[in-house]
Length: 220
Image (tube, rainbow, N blue to C red; front, top):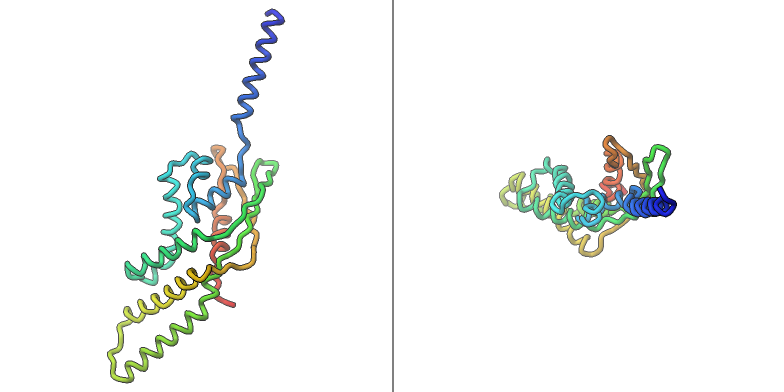
């Protein structure tokens, strides 16, 4: 092979390697974590679709599934259908207004990552629980006085639904006035490589993030 021929081959290989280097991107653990949070809580699908190759329909199902899981926690309350729809819309608003900042990823020797996520938790349940107790007690006293004055005792279902409506009204008015947030908390999320060279966030980390986003603490 002539020197000119060898030089052409070397140059060609250099160009190919340069092109391949542009195509092979290091896994973006920070971007992946943000994409998961965005699609799960805010129904923002673009980055998730870009990073995972999922379809728009598949991505949108993640938000819907998250809402289904949220509502499942209230199954024991036996919401009437219309009341359930109202609460679901309310929780969708809360979900889309969660606040978080995803930090830079740190890679370890096994090529797994940790990512710090700073969260300002929504504190609406703790902030409104006292008012809910006050109004629920007032309603109970009102019913009791009405019965003592000769009115018919409402059924348990009617009273229960009225209490749900009281709490819904409190939550809705609080959201309209401005969703309350607590102090920033940081959660370290692990992004681990599983079989098949696929990265995923462990379930326990997902649960920790979820519990922090919207605080269920009703004690002050």
